[in-house]
Image (cartoon, rainbow, N blue to C red):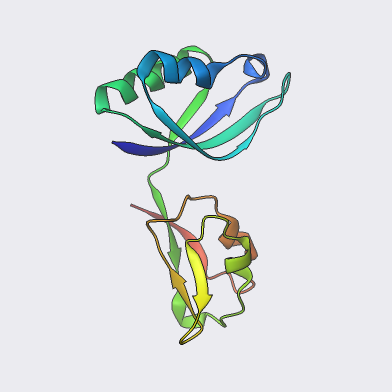
Length: 135
């Protein structure tokens, strides 16, 4: 079972191998999508955790016990296509490749399965056509 989480690391965990310990203890596959973590500083990590339901539950409890904030991401990015100018700003901001423009029609395509919820498209769109919707 794959789930996306936003992990918030307090300053006290910046120099500890929390993710390494998580993998060893619970045999979880961790796909780090985006991270900003430094020693002696607070940080965040957008990660996809892949394991059975029981191991995921234990892993979340482990992280919380170490002071790590754990937020399950269940939102989806929504796009109002009717006002799109095909400018490509969102495509340039989308590092996961969920947004593309290409031949033959040169129209914006959105592959929701590739979206990692980084929300870069929301700030990149000059017309404000992207937003968050509940799953």
